[in-house]
Amino acid sequence: MLQPLCFSHGWLRHWLGRSLCVLFAAISVIGLAPSALADEGISNPYPSLPYLKGDATVELMVNDAPITLDIKGKEAPITAGNFVELVNNGFYDGLSFHRVIR
Image (tube, rainbow, N blue to C red; front, side, top):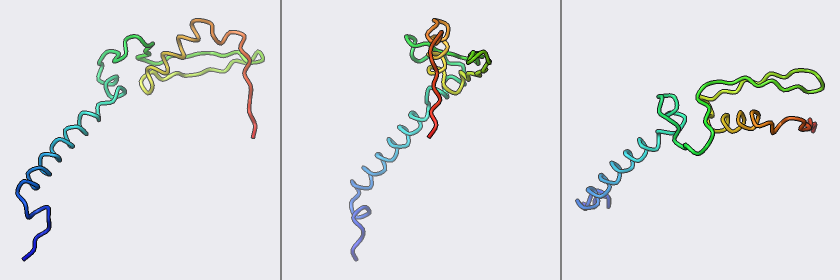
């Protein structure tokens, strides 16, 4: 009686079994994203980039009306760190903001 190819050869079954073990190990390692590491209290994985560990509040003045922004460092620590650093360096001082309507 003919058997399917994957079960007819012992070496193929052995190779597929080892490949699946390596695949599951790789998936479990890749699952440790920088956001997950930040939640566990691990230090900045990119020390040369600005990194915001907590939350920050930024107040924009547009036409003499304040707009308050809550910056969440836990969700996007590097992006939030970049934004807060630009605010602290005065990058947005006097910058024109435009509203796009489609």
